[in-house]
Length: 472
Image (cartoon, rainbow, N blue to C red):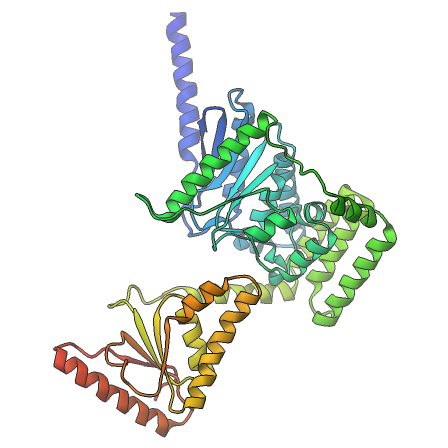
């Protein structure tokens, strides 16, 4: 009887644990040997964000992982190939009624990541895709970080672009990790950092090369490989074969020594503040608050730093500047969404009428997507200016090391410049971007329609519509 009762209790306990596990929608995990692989996946979005639900489930999962004696370490990875965590859920912040509620949100995030930072078992963040805002704050709270060299893998703190600041420990951990100058550059500009640069800065410990085609897609193979590598590194950390802390070189030791002087640090604060005032004219409060938070943490200690961060985060979230910047961001996101459904025919070749500023700009973004683009103008000089504009835009990316010179030239090979309509007949779409003169527009559209009508009549096809940027 005792055995039956015990089995009954065990069955109820197992069922309860299974119900708890199956009820989770954003975070789940499985144990592979002695490593817990924690997977993040927001089922309602193309990207992962730090929502209330995700934080709640993450806390539950980590409690189970820490309580499991069979688990020695953990790997944190996303189930979305192009996104680790894209940041905090803006709706969560906007749902707060006042600054105090937002400050409470910030404090909860700080506490969560403090638990991650002080984890009794090492946690390896396996990063592929966007790791931004709260996502980066989560990653840098982990004991080890591995990132893929994929083009989609970027790390950054874009909160300043929303009139906010990193509110879950970012203003306190980043300066310690990458130094004051780099931390200020990241937080005050909001720029994205690619994986290779992130490793040089100390944001990530190791890089993983993306894999090519196989039985699975390249992204799926890369994610599988990233997980395998992260698991091996997690075991290596436990066995002490892989050090968590990098051995500092002589230059880094010198930099630390120089930064130990208050006079040097004050010079950095003053220089950064002067640049901010010069560029923003003091009209944006977030950059100044970021400096204030960093300075509080470095000069007064972590307690003062985290308090300044949470309070300033709450205050900034309820400013008119932040509301306007968030509105602008949401508008940009809405504009990127395709409201028209799947097109009737795939656009493999795009023809553009007019190589001016607008036409050349369209050509640049189109060739960058791998679409063969035909750019037409009426004069050699006009066409040359348009082609040079496209080249300059791509060459600027090369100078910033976002792409290689080989990639630049490969992208440019998709562009064809011409003075006639020879390649317009078979184009999947034609965009009119000629000079703002109604008579010129009418004449040009009449010419190109005649060319395309003639071709498609001969082929027995229906003539595709032309797209004019400005109704005629």
